[in-house]
Image (cartoon, rainbow, N blue to C red):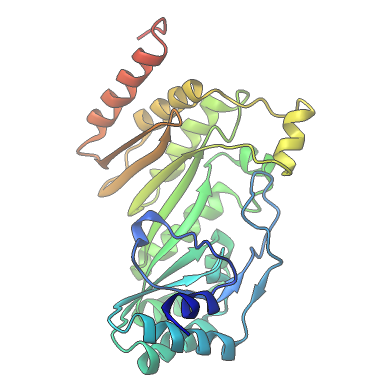
Length: 292
């Protein structure tokens, strides 16, 4: 097989979704689907959930090691690969000694409940073995919104899980969905999400504008009048409120979906005012009659 055929042989789908911060990092598929698979807004959990057998993971790693022999970091691919028991993750980490010997860092997607199911001893062990980063969709810090969207966690559980990661030294990158509360809860979403984030220490915060995907429970809610989506301009107003109330440190803040066109990014807290200035300028241009 040629190189493209080898790559195709180790992935279930043609498209691989990695966080922007992991661009260029080789990805080892260890699971498919989401163990929760119940969020009302989600369009990504299309595969039935499964963890691949260890012999399949080992064979895929052997091929990936041939394709990327120079790799020093490995992303374990799966919608929440951290659901895998700590003992099995440790075994996967150990296998790199044979097939990808230069790898000394690991990262993956995780849900908050994946973290809470693991003991502090297990988290410490995995960090000592090279687990450096977890990518986590927290979406909102508002319990009514999390409940409405059937996220399966609470804001208090999110803070508890992230504080556990802080204690053992595992970094985490968080995703927030702007507009997730709709018009009904927009101010609450911004303020309570900022309040929750201020109790954590994310490496970065990636904000994404809510998209109502077809054939999702959220789309049904919209059609029934149970959810009132916001315009991009209204979502940007919500983002301004979030930023105004956000007081995290040593954190990169990024929104790649501003008004469906722009990207804003800056380090917090140093560039907070610059971010707010950019938001205000965009609001003035797109909403000329808005009050300052």
